[in-house]
Image 1 (cartoon, helix red, strand yellow):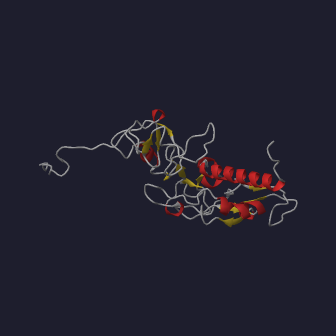
Image 2: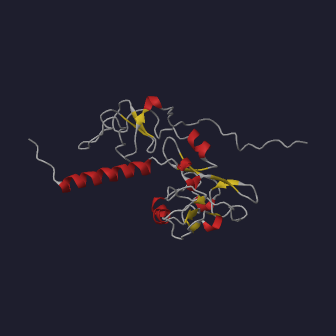
Image 3: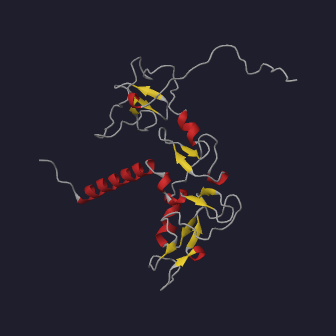
Length: 247
């Protein structure tokens, strides 16, 4: 008979499973549903932008700020508030408690929001992979690429996703052998065959995507993607020819 698990062993297994779920939640964050990335329209200049404490265009303070953690605009009678307001509801500047240094949005005066938002802010490393701009350098929202999960600003999201499914090789062959690559990693831009996508000594979960052996990002079958290979354009260059002046 197998040995009976002790209480400490059960506690350690539960803690490791909880940490694994937290890591998976951090990798699969839906930025569009987070209050710190909500769309906001300024009350004065009517410019549409990301949820901010101050307008990115005219620096105006909004009349009804939205909490970056819980997404509320009105604080009801609650015991969680750091600033007590018994018998009344608060809105506007009476509801806010701090400004997040990462996402530049208001955080309400709730004890839970003030103590947890900065550590769990989904825009912590949100730097656009195309233009290298952070949250403070542009006024738009932040998005994730649906293929490589890279951060994208509002200006470059469509252009990047249109050119993201391109491999860094001239064929669909495996990066370690000469066979056809059945699995593709969109972060490394390489393909792997059935044998080389699996690492020795690594335990794979059932019904879960196989992680990439190089970067541990989840791989997808090549036939499910519209992947193209690297292309070269040969021929004479005509861009630098002088155009005749119009009379």
